[in-house]
Amino acid sequence: MASSRKSKSNSISCGAENVLREQIRCGDHLVVALSGGLDSVVLLNLLASLSVQMRFTLSAVHVNHGISVNAATWTKFCRALCRSKGIPLEIARLKINRESGVSLEAAARDERYRIFAKLKADYVVLAHHLDDQAETLLLQLLRGAGVKGLGAMPVVRNPASGIQKQISGTRSEESARGPRILRPILDVSRREIESYAVENALKWITDESNDDVSFDRNFLRREFFPLLEKRFPSYRTTFLRASRHMAEASLLLDEMAEADSKKCTVFEKLRIEDLRKLSFPRARNLLRYFLARQGAILPSTAKLEEILHQLLSARPDAKVHVVFGDAEVRCFRGVVHVRKADTFPNAEWPLSWRGEKQLVIADLGGTVRFTRRKGLGINLQKLMERPVTIRMRRGGERLCPSCNRPRRSLKNLLREASLPPWEREALPLIFSGEHLVCVPGIGVDCVYQAAEGEPGIVVEWKAGRKSPLE
Image (cartoon, rainbow, N blue to C red; front, side):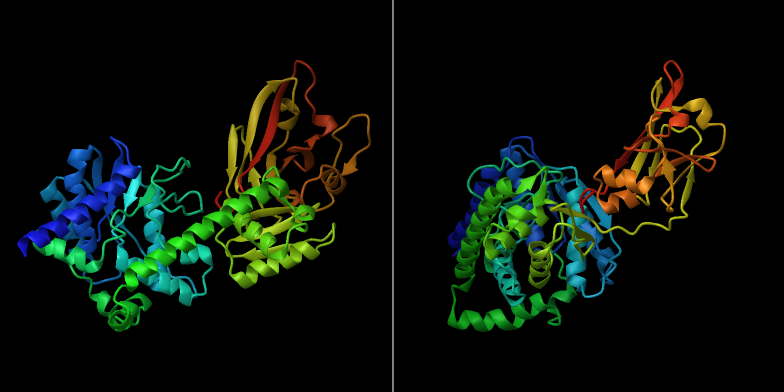
């Protein structure tokens, strides 16, 4: 019996080691997400041993959500456990703000992943296992998820890409803006994890909320799966196989969308004319892929189809504007733009300039830069004769950027510059007193242009609202 248990323990360790060797390199930094529960304690114990022979750096992070009355006790336990093993531990304390329609479980998960994305590491290692995978697959099915959602949890994924990739035996070459997520015990059942913990005399804490069947996952774990196991004892591995089929199908759809994207986009913008040439399912697949690539949280199926119908039926001059979550889809001259939904301040908003090299305008999500250049831009002496302010359009502004042409309305100048309407409304204008001096990207008024040899200042506007992630 002891030999059998030892074999199971070795099996878990070997399985985790195989996954790690396929993914990590000598010297990589791995951070274990340590809750103090059974699964993460076992994972920490496994990696502590493997870090020596595989020569990777190991640390841990504990996220204190502040939800349970026992949260401080769990933090204390994790700190003591890591100290006993000589493993550095980072404590992240959160205050969960639940949005309307978002469950406490989902809000806590989102906050955890935000913490993970900021960690300075190559991988964040999670203790998800075979039973978690089965629960995730069924929950996604009950929510009506598509093939991407039914692909459930991959062994490794890049959180920055928006596209999950199932492990394929080689290290992914995708670049990341944060650590990859790694799940080395995803093929291990909860029973095997429990056996490993008992065999190695490990101690852990139990979250009292695990018994609360008002949470969907706990209901499945406590009520549904024990009944399912009586009839289908191998459901875990069957579900795992199904999720991998779905993950493969998802990758194929992404590959098709990537091929379609090369034909239908220009400068990372989607052309409606080319989108219309695709079948509706293929166009929907491309739009979903396009939104994900732009960093948007994907809308519901109904909302996605609403967006697609509006795009496909839009006239060339139509002002398509659809908001979903904190993102929005707009059209201009037959091209689709995905941006962060704007909430611009009132047009009376002002800002003073007193010679700074740059001014960050948080309300507009960008920066105005001032670079001193002789004979270029604005005549600095004339500009400073009156108080210099930066403000938005109020209507009726006029400018004369060409000295051999009459003064013209700013409205017409912006239209001729082919700026999308929403960018026209977000341009900061430079005034000296009440005189419009400069519109970044459009020009400097003739009266204020620096002549050759005169001290000048060039004004540039760097917008930062190109995509929902910026």
